[in-house]
Image (cartoon, rainbow over all chains, first blue to last red; front, side, top):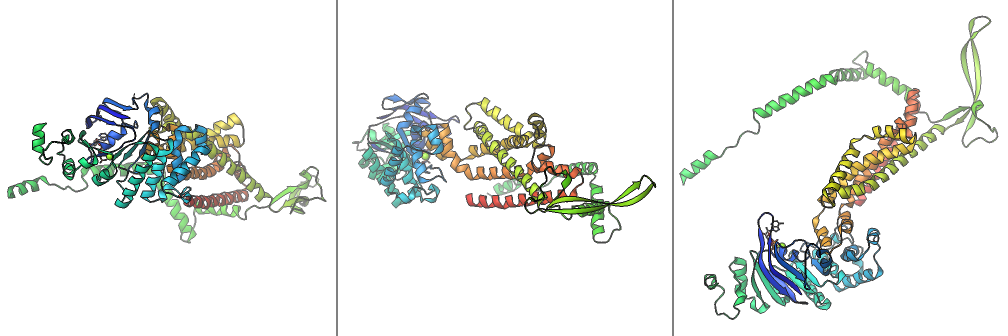
Length: 267
Length: 336
Ligand SMILES: Nc1ncnc2c1ncn2[C@@H]1O[C@H](COP(=O)(O)OP(=O)(O)OP(=O)(O)O)[C@@H](O)[C@H]1O
Ligand SMILES: [Mg+2]
């Protein structure tokens, strides 16, 4: 269970990236986060793995608040798949995947690169699951295609059996066909491992196809929360025009969403 | 509308790239160079050099520089390869069992002697037996060069070992606190500020003559250089992989090891090779103050005016540096 309680994030320069967001994601759900550029999607996700911390409100993971103290313990339950893959270039595929389990490896073992057999087997199994072959093991990740690199990134993310997987625009730099393949993989992997997923995307059609649930943020506010079916084309249009306002609160209302002035009058 | 465009034209202004201030600066710089040039005897340098070149092509009748160069060249050539030792000075000399490649020769030297009876100068011929090793001196120099290379190697090793912790604490994004950062940065500056020759002088006093002082001096200076450059590469490394490892809780040291080191390795190797290269050259110089290796031999021969020996030493140094250059260039191109 993953919970945001009235979270606000203000950067030192005064930017309010997140404004009073409350959100609960139950265990095992595949939740897609939509929103225009600069809406605050990355900031929202980064508060879960401790790369950013809320100015107000609390972020909870399995009923424990993520604070400066608990973050180093809690972040081991959270894995991240990044838009730019964030693999270590010039390092082999094998070591990149193994590095996903670094917190479990002692300093001296990590120092000389002697990973325990169990971890090495797990790395091979995961690489097999993401569709790579044994020939890829010694290759440098910088020599792989973008799609293959993201597969390595996904394998790395599952090395520590995360309870939560954060995917920040995992397919933003990949072509449409590869993108679908990667999301299929993410979806299947998280189903098989029982992982809760929070995945930000820029493609509403992919969100509809793979999300159990879709939320949307705009200018730091949560403006939509619903099922894939409720994410109609007109909602999307409003979202990217910045004219969407908590549409989901009246899911049965006959008010056409495309009339924002009326919406605002009601709110 | 036209009014607006007129206003805009008045606002636009593109000045020349230079103004009086630039000219003033240029004049001051020239003045400083002129004063300093006189102090550095630049005019005499130009005069003597031109005269030397003129002498070489037959335009000038005399040139102190050219004569000096000629005298040195004549005394360097031919290079000293062999080694002669008077047999009477060799203990337990075994005539039947000569060292490899060596031979015994009798050398006759004419001497002017004062005859004490007649009080006249008489010419006498003295002969002495010498053992000649044809490659004796060359192999001696090669051994000294090897010692110098070993000094450079150990100096490099030491500087790498010292600079790893220094770089870790001197990288702003890894230093645990401000104090450690400042301490490390100032240590690095201090190490870089002390020239090898100076620290070698003091280290010779502490550790005595020999390679210890040499490689310690090299190691300390190299650590300052490497610490600075390693730290800067850590700071400039791509943050993405580091964030990825940090966000799963890998800890700073392991993040550095797996998120940064593979990225910066090629540069690190290039710096380290450069330091090794530099250490080889510096090791020959600091030998002069007694820190072992070929430098000591060079200084001894120079002080005794044995320029043919000096010539051999210089050729060996040149060949070593040249070969090392080739080697490191090849290694670098393979790694990068
Ligand atoms: N470190 C920071 N300091 C100041 N402002 C920041 C910082 N990081 C992000 N912001 C601002 O916070 C807002 C939200 O940024 P965020 O990166 O979360 O958006 P995003 O939804 O992920 O956008 P994109 O789709 O382009 O990735 C933006 O206005 C951005 O400029
Ligand atoms: Mg983003």
